[in-house]
Length: 247
Length: 379
Image (cartoon, rainbow over all chains, first blue to last red; front, side, top):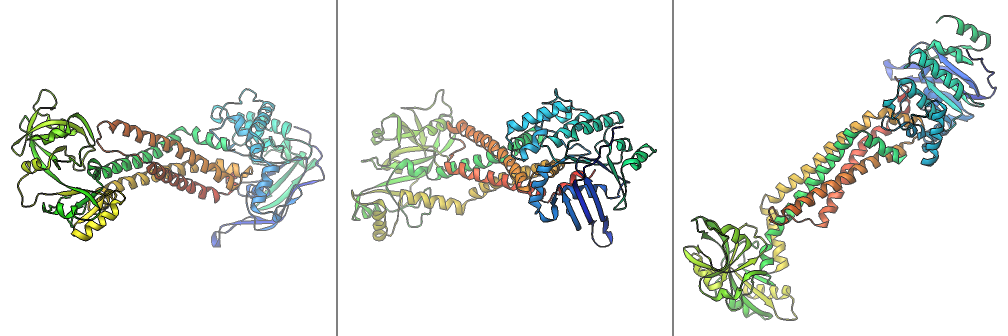
């Protein structure tokens, strides 16, 4: 188990009384019910809870990929409420990295091209983007897979490529959606070790939504969600106790 | 990002080939069918180019160049008497039956030229002398005539050989080159008087009066005077060609038939490209969602889709037009089927292909525009 670091006092993500409903009339479902959430810079923050409790909805809202109905969302000091959809997209491209459960690598592009996408979206030249992508692929342990396509890689290797893609533009917020759930136990552990090693950086907040109790020990803070609301927030001794109990 | 858009497109080899194939097929169909149609339209006025007269005077109810309604012999002098007419000569034109050496009947387009001037003579003489038409029972035939009238002979029919037209002997004194007549019959040239001997006897035999304006006058103004003074219809070559094409458009099923095929080519292009491109977008929806999540704006994704569609369009257009041109070269020698590839056809096909590609891309862009980036977080 890695030693939990002291989270910075600076806020990376703050959700204040955020609500989000899906559907209309009788089929209307409240996924987030006036939820408050806080994550600090420099911390690895896990969001856990049963299926349907609103984890992914909350993740989508803080990433600016889903509109919310009420409340305020502040990410890296920027109130998303004040931004237009276009500005939110640009903000996301500059400051947020993503790691998805299904990797979402583009199958027809090779590893370097996949990893270079965020830099290209931010206006970098092809040469600069591919050089940075190659360097990061080497850092995640895939220096010999630069020209391989995702279909030629194992699940763990694909997730490493996805991690490189999420980090290549040095985002200040890294959002991970079930990064280990599609992987076996050993590979999942390797991926978390890698994340803990390469993703942690001063000022960078890593938020991981997960069902996988095996990775709880990597967390600096765990937020439990229940029925669209934030429940317990575990840090310090409470966190250590929570991690060590059977799940 | 645009180079990645192209890699995304070409990486899906099956869909890429399907898209290019669809546009190629549509381009080929539209270009080739338009080319054959233009060639066929050119045939309808080939008669005018073969005779090369400035003014064509015909019976008042003649609707197009290949129609014959006989005039009186005295009408030639009426035309000659119109001020501004430099000269006017009679011409016979009619479809007659010829018999080959093996006894087969072949239809020929008999042209009787004014004996003194031979005005309206064939454009290119390949062998023999046109002036020999002044000898009795002589004819000049074109290359198609050589092909059609050689039946039953050890070698192609040629100078000095004879065949029968309406049971009268015709001796070949020349071989010429002409543009093929719309009706597809070979040209047989003779003198006007001789042609009347070959043709079945009728009360009026004069088909057309060919005239030329005096120097300093335009064919148009002289044609107008002829009409006013004689009551006959007088056309310049351009006018006669225009009314002929107009007649074909309005009174035959040929344009409708070709237009149907051309439109079908367009529709097939839209159907194949639209469906394939849309399915390409659907299959890549999660990836487009991931790109959106990573900061790609809708306009940037739309640019990527447009680039992909236009790339398919350019490649498919090039291949389709190339195949149509290859078809043109193949049939150039035989002239069958007729084929004329005009620059306007290329531009119009390019426009149609552009429309196909833009419509196909728009289907995908509409889908992408409505796509929520949050789709990537849903299992």
